[in-house]
Image: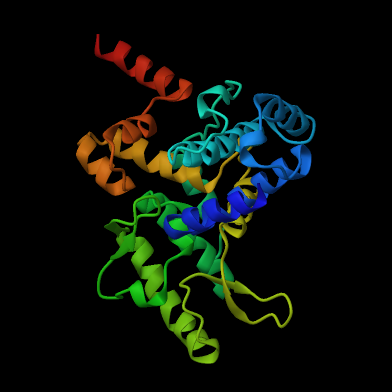
Length: 293
């Protein structure tokens, strides 16, 4: 089984390197729980046993994710006519989908109001928050930005869309661009020292130098920190800004095709999900309709 997993991960790593790393963790656990036996000897009893083992140790979301990975693994070999467990028998318990609330404009303004710009790392954080709001970019796409992608003569950049690798343009506001113009000379001085290519860098723990690319987890932490500092009780994540961008453009009557392009979606159905009204948005809009009667 371990050999089959290695072969599968090699194939997976070609088109999705990061996913293959995560897949390895959950598939390795499958072998640890059910044993390293030939793939054709795995039965639905093994899968149920593994799911029950996961249920006592991980969240419902992780259980669903691990089940999807197992199903994809067996589908890979089933498609090659291997005599193995049919993926259709591997079921996952339906649960509440992981959701992200769209950040509202007043919340965004509260957050940026508590971030000073008198030091390098504060200026970095302020630009990160503003870019998330201005562009609707994925946090992983933001962290992947390099200094070479920034042309200080224009408030835009061309990036590779994370899930499709298609190139798309992101555009930020003039206010954000002015902060970026203030940030770039400092960042380029650091570039001369350590040759780090990332636009947004963090400090190395061992020598405190600004040379490591900021991680998505670091961005999640700083968003949580500033949201708490701004007195926002509800959970705000980097993905909340992506939803907020879509909802803001919806309220500005932007065409669906514009929002789809901005978010980097191939399927408009994916974009439609981001445009859905929250309960609070619906309540506000409903009250506004009464005033038009």
